Amino acid sequence: MQAGDGATTLPDIEALRGWARELGFASLGVADVDLSSAEPGLQAWLDAGFHGEMDYMARHGTKRARPAELVSGTVRAIMVALEYAPHDPGWLGAARAALADDRRAYVSRYALGRDYHKVVRARLQRLADRIQAQVGAFGYRVFCDSAPVMEVELARRAGIGWRGKHTLLIDAHRGSTFFLGTIYTDLELACGEAGDEHCGACVRCIEACPTGAIVAPYRVDARRCISYLTIEHKGAIPEELRPAIGNRIYGCDDCQLACPWNRFARPAALGDFAARERLDEASLVELFAWSAQEFDEKLAGSPIRRIGHERWLRNLAVALGNSGGGDAIVAALRTRADDPSALVREHVRWALQRLGAPMSDALDAPKPAGDVIAQAASVHNSD
Image (cartoon, rainbow, N blue to C red):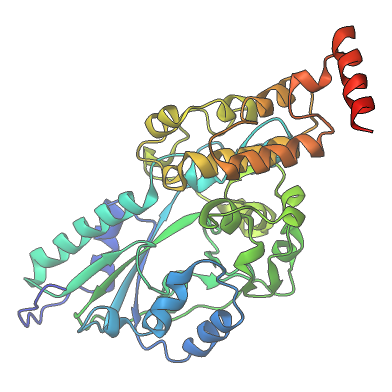
């Protein structure tokens, strides 16, 4: 955190919101950083093991709920939202159609374009620069899903929205299709107030989860979550969960697609999140054919690139195994049957078995008469 100089002329919330809008942010609020009431819930979630292999969640422990331990001097959190929904007004229907087409790859709508971490952080820095131009040097640090920060809880307290039963933040005016960004600061800005919750008795998000990862309202077991399994999880995807993954190769939007508030989702103000490389319509077969070099080149600057080519192929193999099969699907899988990665080979083998196909064309072809005689002789000689 940068050192403050004791400046006392602080911008009011309307000035902050005006600067935020100029930078493309949809909303802004300010929260106090006393998260002591949220800490027991965080600890219970960790104690239940719901974080899975995300060891950093447990490693940082209570620091997530104690902002001043992460950044000394923090007394407020400036919270912002940046929308990412596609510009197509029929995007909800288009997303559902993509999920229903088992030959198409489904990528979570937030990941179709540029890496949001970089986009949000860069604009947060510009917001911090604008504040500094008014108040002088002050202590701050910007974050976007990049450190132990309770973004949703802080944004709720800042009045940006309420926590849905799927644990995402919901805004009555824009649904839940937005990223959250945070500025920890030593400026004693006026705080906002948490708004009312508007989910009522609705449980559509819980019912829509393909793997039953939302184990109770406001409680997600990441170990069952498709977003976790396709992004954070590094090893083999548990076999019992593979069929439910369907054609989702990076992330999952089902709980958001089911949420009635997302009929109010607003299109992204920035062009950064528009689909690239036809990721909103590409087939499983064409993406499975990408080499490691093509993966790196085509997805440079994309959040998807961080999972690496190996996990990309792992995810696609599962999706291909969940498809209706056919010659093109089976042929694509067989091209990776001898992949250097044991992880990829295992998922390819599972997919071919699920489709009832042997590992190679050689196993399908009729054997020449000489081979049949030789095999019979071998069996006879072994008796």
